[in-house]
Image (cartoon, rainbow, N blue to C red; front, side, top):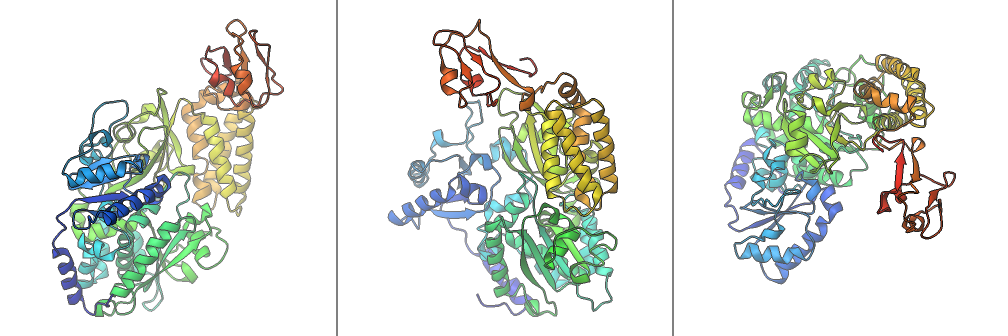
Length: 623
């Protein structure tokens, strides 16, 4: 690709690309993000390409391979444009039928999306509740783009914001737009992005090197928002980084991404090379006096490196351990120079703000929380995937209207927001608006956007223990309150889950949680007690049941469960005996059976296979 020499040439080139006639033929859109590929989208792509070539359909039908479309539960899927017909969970034998239907201008009704437990068929993606109830400002662009084709990005309005900035590279104007838009950092703390840019702009003496860092070190279990944006729309991140660099006076940017994201790294690498070849990156951008380039730094996957100061040390080639603040990174960051760090989703919002204008952007959301937020919606719910909603949307709308409600006949009990450091919010509080302050007041956090739905089969003591165990393992160990406090909290939770707890342990957990929160060095330790404190706050009776009754109401904690056989009900059919992997079932054919407790590993297979409900699970609510 020939490098563009001037801003005027760039403007003309963009306009030329945007004015090109659109293909007047149907297009098959395939979600080929990491989730889509894991579900078999590569096989779908291979068959479509084979059909097009073998049947000579190049002039009749087109194929667009995109990043994540968000409806991960339904991958692999095909979206047919222009009708927006969605065909979910496809098998390879379905592909030729869909292609035939597209060529004939009809649909394959039995393959279209149907809502769970209903006979209703949805003929358009826009009618499906999962999509209809979202505001897909950022995610919606994934559907329109092939992430490794820069011309595709330009054709869909890409780099329009950068064009405006190059025509008016006044840092004060750029930063003022970000401030007026009310953009808050989407990485967890929600710090105003404009204020951070202002501080980075003022830092240094005018000749001091400065850096912009895109934090793509997404380590929350079950969260993949940043990965999907970087995979599906890498040029939007490049555009956001370059604009941030011009605003603060930086000449170098870094994308810090964990090595476990190979597809995101691949697409970002290709996009950076394309931008550099076109002249968007490098020296004298578009003939201006602005220099800016981007480099990818691969992280080793330490959860704590999501924290700014630990991330900076990792970029420098040192062990990723947090450091005392102040000084803040905007004053002393990478190699001691002013550094502005924003996460992927924050930077993806920057081109939207500059292109549309701050006033238009701020129409979405609520005061103090403007724009949209992307969540990774997972757990015991019908529709899992990525969802994007305006700030101020209720948890109930996300869980029930978008997520489709519970996966089984079990009622939803709670949702955890904010990843491992988030809190568990009970179902009766689901009318809570999603914003930074409301979630914090409820004992949780926004975090980077993880949202895990839990039903009646979830033990809150076990959840608290799981996350505390995760966080103690991921703690860098630098400060004793985090290192020792989390270890002791995990030991207490294990004792409670295994029937050795004491009632005073609940107060001790609350005291320890307060100390760890108030005395830890970085955000990991400061938020680590949230899962414990929130579950005690809202589900204290469950802790009491474990301690005083030696009973796990959800039937999860194995040490508090016993499987027994009611001899009056047992018919002696022997299916439990045949199925038991430990040989723990005793009894003769046609006679009553029993469970040898010394051999039983509490796997529950006997309980599942018994057709007569003779196997009882004791130590469980309503058993």
